[in-house]
Length: 398
Image (cartoon, rainbow, N blue to C red; front, side):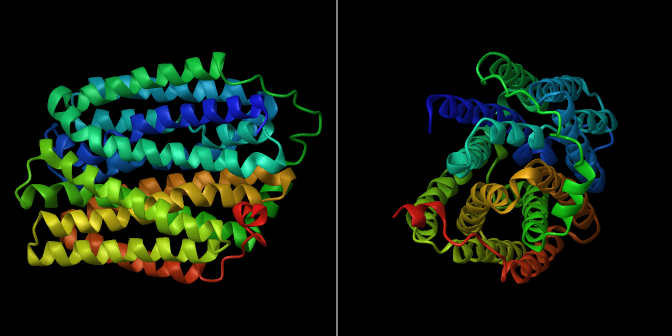
């Protein structure tokens, strides 16, 4: 990478990391903490509050992506971060679950993922763009990992409102990075946004991209639903919520070792399709282990194993799929492709929270994991014939 490309890649990865850390910090503790608020006695309502962020994101990803084509990437990113920060402040104040749901919707209005990835594409050459996208994906995975470790002790110390206050502070840091560290965006040419409908229609007709869009929907539905049910299982197994980070840390460290030592080594050798299928299969196995553990009252060790398996698959897909979208999409439609991809990601966040809460309330945690198994099976069938680039950049360079 050229110096300007490294600066853009690390700065935008940092913006993503700060924003996603603020989002992920509440996931492991949200279901337990929100249940204490007035109106939080119904798991379905708690799941709605958790997932509505994704619903609003889904509605605004493509419009804000188009707005960044017309009025500039940085303007849209700063405006989106400001909305996310405002929602965080409102969530920190929220006295009831209803207000917390409104606050989560305001957070979701800051739908900047497509604009950020489009800006990264603007600031990098085709030959290094995969590396830049992978860096962003890795930053999201690291934010997720850090949040799982930090959230339980932080929640015990400052509570859910304090976590949202911390999220607002992280958002301010992200805005500062966009304003003063991210390089200036290149001038928008007159024809850049002349036919957004044509670009969107082309993306929606591409089977390879649609498979990845459905995959990210399934991935984040599984992730959000997991956190409606898993914290309660750990408590039932005898582990206080303030100590959940111990299980998360052990599971994450092992998952990163497996991901780097096995799965990514396959990818470097050109077996990207096998890596994607193996990662989805790990998500399926994790749901099966959690279902068995919930039914048989298994202890903490089995829950930790299931989480390790889940994290290995999740982090692999979170790092690989956005890069793959950027490589498969035509250059002229890359922004539209990333907008659709992030829209389906947001739909998954909403669907997982809402459906996970409803299933937990009506049928118990076991139903969440059975539904997750069905979803993972369907995804594996869809992804089995996923079209891929001829060779991964690692294999091409070897």
